[in-house]
Length: 114
Image 1 (cartoon, rainbow, N blue to C red):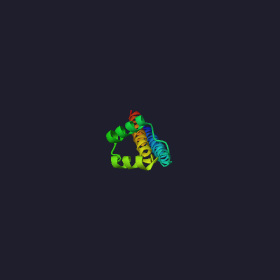
Image 2 (cartoon, rainbow, N blue to C red):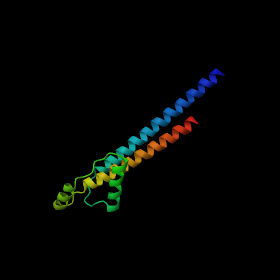
Image 3 (spheres, one colour):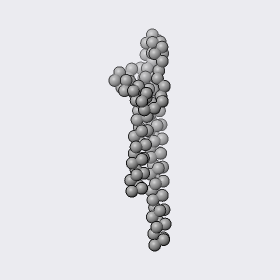
Image 4 (tube, rainbow, N blue to C red):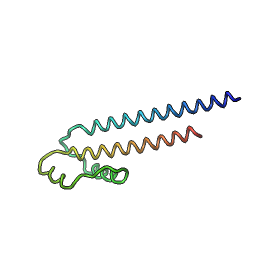
């Protein structure tokens, strides 16, 4: 009987660690993919609705810095550099993906404990 209790505890900890490592790997992969997408130079501006949504997400969900309005004015004079806008969108996508993975992790841990 003692052997059964010990083996059940061992089985739980193995499942827990497997789940934790898998969620961590998925999180790292998502972050790497999003950061790689953010580094691509784009000559077209992002859709305005996406930019507004990203700005709201970054302001409410995390502490991502906002762009300077003076930088926007100088960008319009200079031409077509929209890298800051795209980085803001990809930062919001990374924040949403991270929040979703945290919720999945917490739900998975609750399922494992029950």
